[in-house]
Structure formats: C-alpha cells, structure tokens
Image (cartoon, rainbow, N blue to C red; front, side, top):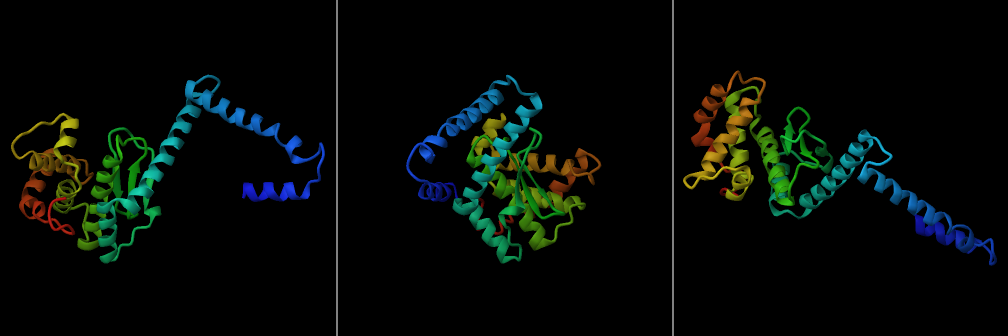
Length: 235
C-alpha cells in the first residue's frame, strides 16, 4: 500500500520545488529518528515507566512466539503430523486455537480443555525445539480429549494423558533432563515421564494431594506408557 500511494503521488505532482522529493523527505528521517529514540528509551528505561518497558517486551515476545508458531505449524514434521491426525479424528486446529500469550515463568504452555485451545507462553522458550516439544505435548492432550473424551476431573484419565504427552512429545529426552538438572543413567526416560506426570496431576484442582497423583499415575502406567497413538513408536 505504501509503494502504490507513493507512486500515485509522484505521478500527480509536477516538477519543481513543490514536488514530493523536496517536501516529504524531511519528515521521513524525523519519523525514523522518533522510532529509534522510542526504542532506545524502552531498552534503556530512560524516560519510560517500568510498565511501558514490560508491555513493550511482552509485545516483542508475543510477536516472535507467533512467528515461530506459524513456522512450526507449516514446517515441523512432528507438529504437522499431530495436526493431521487431529483432523482425522474430527478436530481441525486452526492457528487461532494455538495462542501465544505471556505466562508466569514456571511453565512453557498449557491446554485449555474447555476452549479446546493450546497456550504457548511467549518469552518462556529457550529454543524453537523447546517450543516444538511443548506444542506436541499440548496437542497430545487435545488429541486425547478429541478421540477418547477425557474427563479431566478423573485423575486416572488425566494421568493417562500426561503419561502419553510426556512420553511422546520429546519433553523427556536426555538433553532436556540434563538442562533441568536430572541425570539418570538407568531408565531415565521412564523416570522423567513418571515424575512430570505426577507433578501435573498433583496440580489438578480435583487432586487432593501428591499421594493421590502418584497412585493415579501408577495405576494406569503400563497401558498408557505403551500407548503411542497416533505415533507408531516413541517419537
């Protein structure tokens, strides 16, 4: 739009000192300078409030999150695979149902089962691979809800979906566990899946305590850990 407007103006203006080349150019550097000055203020904190700095940072993080999300939805083999299989079971997932938003620093994403939406925590990803793992994890919850009609207040249902999501998303790869500070040389993957599943179930408002979460995970462990649908094997 800017180019076509500029061309139209140039075509209608006559030669001489009143042409756009002499009247419009002085405004461009001023506008560019003001944008640069505003950005410098936000970066340094000089002349702006802390609230303005935080709002600008969150806007920047959300913009990058949406850019990476769009890329993964189109080019990540595992994300594309999950989206395809969600569609096959009757749950098409448009980009609007995967939301980038600021969150607290304790999590990377979530699944809002009532809205059928995946939440990605803008600014909380240390790499695109981290975002990819998170998307697959939350899409697995969506897949389970769509195909198996999960009752999220039933701790066994919730436990099964958490086991599958942690097992199949890449969340429990050795390098991810190393980054978290967990080093286990025997059955590291299983230990990670179980620990993270118990933590998630314990956070369910319907769960009375950690012991109940651990019991629910143990009761469904064998069947749910070995259920790799829609994958043929652990991704």
